[in-house]
Length: 257
Image 1 (spheres, helix red, strand yellow):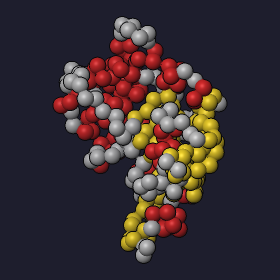
Image 2: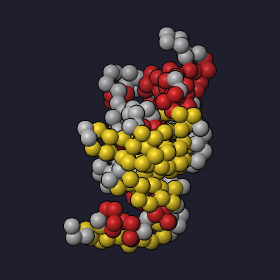
Image 3: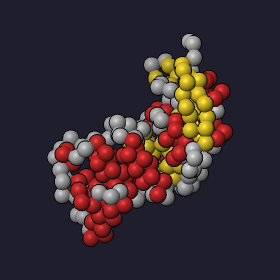
Image 4: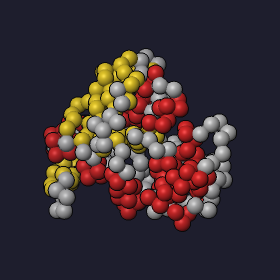
C-alpha cells in the first residue's frame, strides 16, 4: 500500500509549519525524512497518522483520503510509533503487544487464539518473546522500543510510520531496530535524525528545510556535500560504506552563519 502527500500545508498560530509538501512512499519501500530541527518532519508524520489535519492538501493511503476513513479502517491499514509512544501503567509486555489487536476486535471483544498467536509471533520477530511476562516499566529503552514495534506489527498494518525510532538508543539497538523495520516487509515512512543511519536504512530520502522539500531521491543522490552544507550548515565528506556501498558522511566543521 502506497502513501502520497499532495500539496500538504499546515498552518498554526499564523505560522506555516509545512508548505505545499509533496512526497510519495511506494508500496513496500522504506522512505526517510531528514532535516534539521524544526524542519517539519514530525508535523508531516502527524498528518499521515491523523494526529493533525492539514490546513490544505491531501494525505492518501492506498489512494484513499486518510481523513475520509473511519478510525478503525485507518488503524487496520497504518500503525505509528511516535516520539511520545509510552505506557504509563504497569502492563506486562504481552498485554502491551495485545493492544495492537484493538482495531481488529470489538470494543470489549475477548482475545482469540488467533490474536494470541499473532502477538506471540510479533514478539518472536523482534527477538523479545522471552520478555512476554515482564513488566513493560522494568525494560530498558532498547527493549521497550522492540516491544512497541512488536505492538505495531501485531496490528497487522500495511503501512508503518516511525518518528525518530532510534532516538536515545545505543548504536547496537539503533541498528537492530532499523533491521527489524526493513525485514517487516511493510511500506515505511520514517523521520530519522542520523543521516548515516538514514542512508543505510532507506530506499529514498526527502530532505526538509523550513517546512519544504528541498531535495529528494536515493541516498546517493540526496546526501551530497552541497545539500548537507545548504540544509544543515555543516561541511561533510561523503564516502562509500566498505560493505554496503551506502553513502556515509564524515563531518568536518560547521559553516559560518
